[in-house]
Length: 68
Image (cartoon, rainbow, N blue to C red; front, side, top):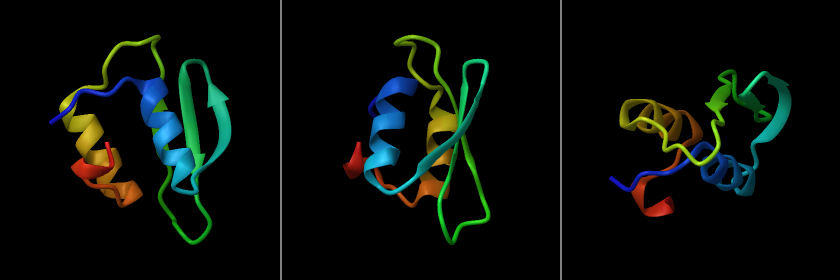
């Protein structure tokens, strides 16, 4: 799986209709109309997200590896 930074993942989910609700420190919190879940993305510069976290957030957002 391709490694993606928090900044890159933020851009990706915004393209898919997720809206930034608020920022708490370095954590960006996104919501989407019609979804109960929220996505919390840690943005620590250009550090890549850990694979487990990335897979879980992609599942919530309805994204596949091809979308990366």
